[in-house]
Length: 198
Image (cartoon, rainbow, N blue to C red; front, side, top):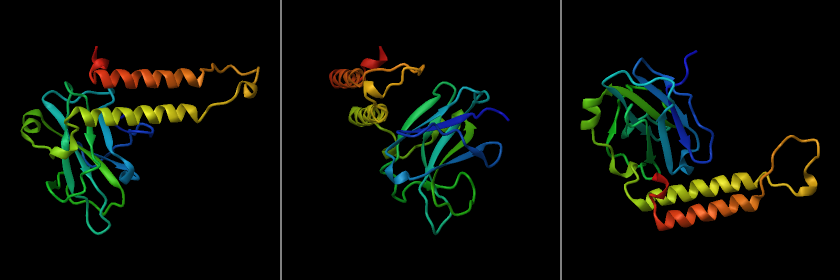
């Protein structure tokens, strides 16, 4: 079986690579419990690039128990732009709906779709403006939430020194170290939201 070409990250969840092909150029995956999702990251896994001159339009569809999925264009990914962050928490309006994946059965979960298309066509498309975090505040909010989730996840495995078994081969890191890293990262982000680029 070929390695997956696309993947999605929802903060606090495992990476999803389970895109199902509808045909040779259309792929979809389900996003469960989408009401609790603010941002998603869609990216190429690196297993294979797009063919020359092609990229992928990224679409999102909220579930509608009474109708087939209607899709909203979020943006696109390509070999030169292999990942993108999209804000989906405000996409529940019916504006800018389209049907790039044809008529599909009614879905009870949200879906992400990738449609492989010519790059010239992708660059002319207009994504819905609420999907892309366009300012630093959105980026900082996403980053803080991601960091909080990471620290909370790590802290959920905390044990006392008395609980460590002598025969284990695990390496342990003090929780205070993780918390200090979080505080330092947060402080640097406040001072310069682009510090991580250097």
